[in-house]
Length: 181
Image (cartoon, rainbow, N blue to C red; front, side):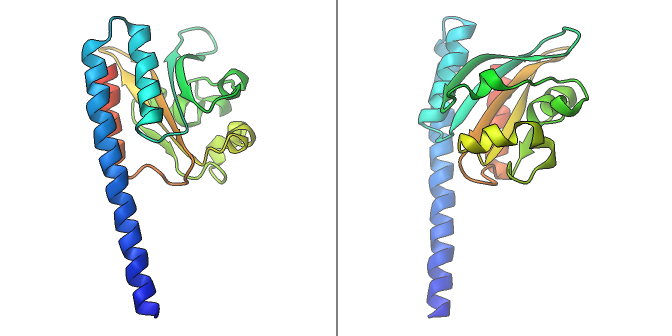
């Protein structure tokens, strides 16, 4: 029975990976269509966030712009999904301070994707942990929106599952963020 249970568990994991990959590819295809047909920047960002929630299965997707003010604040400019005040209650910066060391600030500062695989345990997520867990977020990724000379902001995705972003998903999301930028 142990061998059968192990086989069934492995089959279920493989099935879950394939379903996630299929959903991701479908969402990516539709996102690329949005990138080609949007009439303006706000429409593009709003539709992209909505699509990633609806077809990608993410709990929250938002785009934040890196401000060049003294506090190096991150200003949310588009969002979709289960938010109910979460973003409005956050203080996020891309400065190298406690409020800038989370995924969004790190992605903007370094120009590299930044992942919180386990929000409940990730020490850099401490300033936002309580609110994130209350909204059912278990993991997140922030992808830099790189311009020619600077990082413009970040595309942020939150999932209900811990460790939701495997290497293949990170790669296609990074490509999407590059296309968006």
